[in-house]
Image (tube, rainbow, N blue to C red; front, side, top):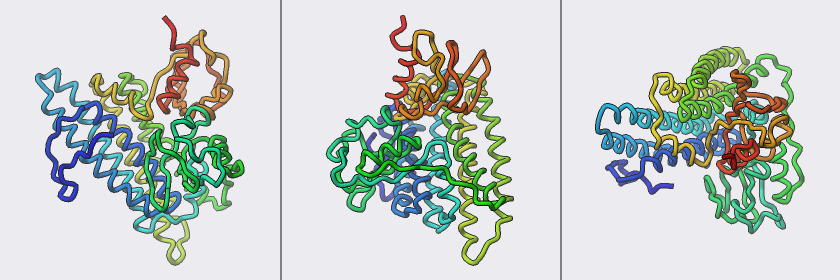
Length: 406
């Protein structure tokens, strides 16, 4: 992570620093994703300490954005340079918008809008789940580093933050030594989170999907929030894919999804107004509406990234490298007959359960299938759009037969 971009954290005064544009972009992408995850976690657990930490991440993104804009302004030498650099400037602005949305998630907690019981059920149903797990006495992972455990490539789980002696450590690095009593905030598949719970010294958790409440309006609101969270998460990754691969088809899908999200959000607002509100429940219902609005803001940001591709701005090589080197990256992977994926379903290949990958789309015979189910069979000649940790992406490329080919 780069040094702080603000010369004076108290006054917020910013001056130019000769920072690597690639490192600034990479740091911004990593910090944005961390902020969104911590924002959802603060809402899920109604944790004010987590929500307060989001404000510092937002300020960091703001400072990095200014550094990016100044560096880009200095590097343009002619019209061709200006056209290539506009993508860097726009992406910096969009990342700043996403971090603002993440900070708004934290404000839901601070304003007392995050206590609706539906929220826990919603977060039990999203594609990549969150869990809070304590490292118990005698746990085999106590005394080991996060990097040594290789959680992302063995059980498909990422540790977003850990709490130690009452203080949160966001985005713990590979060298962080886990200790007894640590509380881990993790994100991953159902089976992966259950396995991590067992490794931490507890019993394997039976993580089940919540059942409908039987209240038609409330059930519909929860359905809509699940769709909004999962879809906007996918949209951002698809937008990055469209940008670095200059893929107009994928960019058009992002714009189409943005319209769908707008429709869902409107329905969410209308359904929320139909809920009976007893004394003190108005703020909790407002929290459901605000959560939907924040998802819509993230959707708009993803559409802004995709719009760069639609308008014909070719990706700058610095931008491509920064996204590829980020903690979580995206890739288009070709399924070869030389690999081990052809003939297997996504579930059989354990791309989600073991590698923690999110398979955003599969292209078969020239047609993209977005948000494919785990029962979709991969065949030679297919293309996959995948998002995940760099090590997991590299393993996917090897399994697909891409690595090692002449």
